[in-house]
Image 1 (cartoon, rainbow over the protein chains, first blue to last red):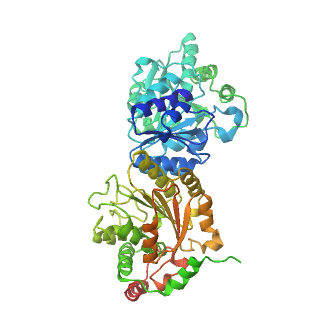
Image 2 (cartoon, rainbow over the protein chains, first blue to last red):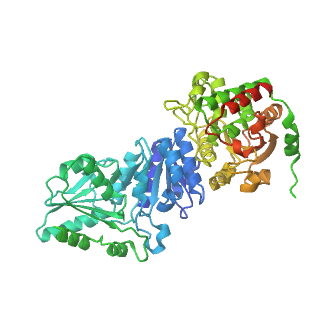
Image 3 (cartoon, chains in turn green, red):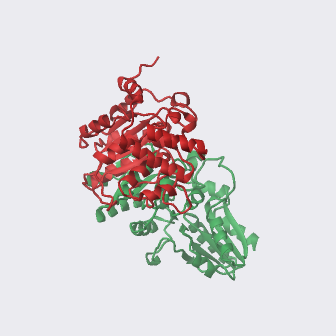
Length: 305
Length: 285
């Protein structure tokens, strides 16, 4: 997914002379072809995320479209004030591409996990927050990213994620995609959890429970219309996210429904509890710890019904 | 015991030199804002007046009737709390009306306690959170290079501001990119909010620090109009090193009882006596 995203930056840069790439201190050979082809629009600025984001803002103030890339916690926590003030206050078309969203970097410990990124970024006015499910969907996001008028945060998943998106999706930032029509249950998921929910829905269907899956790839601006049309009439609404329960997708969905005056069905929010992680392993084993595997999601749904 | 540089010593000796009429006029514009708003960073706005005066009068290319002219030079007041100095120059150059100064910090005013891009014509970036302006200026200088524009970028920072690590991140990048079109200016008035910089976070040797980051570092008496003018005229702007100007200034310059006084960094109200004293000082300065 990361290579797909970065190669797309190169492709966009060929298409549009406003596009520049800024990395911090990425892996050997990152976007080598772009660097060779257009060195004046390729920047690798070192382990200095505050400067990278401020510099991107300065470029965007003068009409460029910077795609900035580094590891998720460092492009969010480390330079939060630059993201808030330089990028969001000025409402600039800076794109933040965050490697290893959620618990992708499980073996590296809590310094390298981004489990509050949705919360802190969606709190910023003007910011859009997107977590696609697979590399094919990433291509579609990158294509539409060029014309997105304001700041955009792109959370990358692990890579090699099963492809569940469709060429016919008509992908648009801010418009959720209904992956499976709802029955008594509607699951709302984002990023890597959408695929888990689809498998959970299969398990539930085998037991006679029809569950829909709404892929909310854009956490902000949230697709209010999709929620208002799909939530009423369900017995159970489940939100599933690779993120702390505080302030993420589940919070955003509930805020939206409450503000719209919708009478809520029973709600279950699945995600990471209010604690920093204490184990290593892999993204998948951490999903297991937090009850986010397909089987566990299905079980939580059955219990709640 | 630290040896003061000759320029720093000379700047100190020159403090008794009276301000000329134009410098007094610009300070009176600052006071129109201060009194209109009933508050403001008076010390921080008085120290960079001559720096801004020379930049706006003699150095920078801009068009008040077309503030977004692409080839203009960019000016960023990274120490946004000194915004009354910039507002004074923007009023003087007719980017904004002089009467606007009196609306400083009022509810519907375009002039807040920190300058905002998109509200105030001639303000390039919203600043106030310290340590952001040099990175933004770096991005603008790189954009000028990519877009093959002749624009130069001038960033004025406070001395307390450069405690921020982000400033030095930006400095490293500017040196690496050999941005001759970028000029970083430190308004070195030796006082930050709490106390003297030497007490809170000593900065010296400052020119050496900037030079080590790849800048041509130059010291100047930041109130000496002729020296500033000669310095800016002498820069190439198309060389392969960015410039750092360490401008030795006096906090509160022009208001004698505020000069060198940490307590005059910011005031959120003025007594009638203080208002009268400030006005009188600028008549006699």
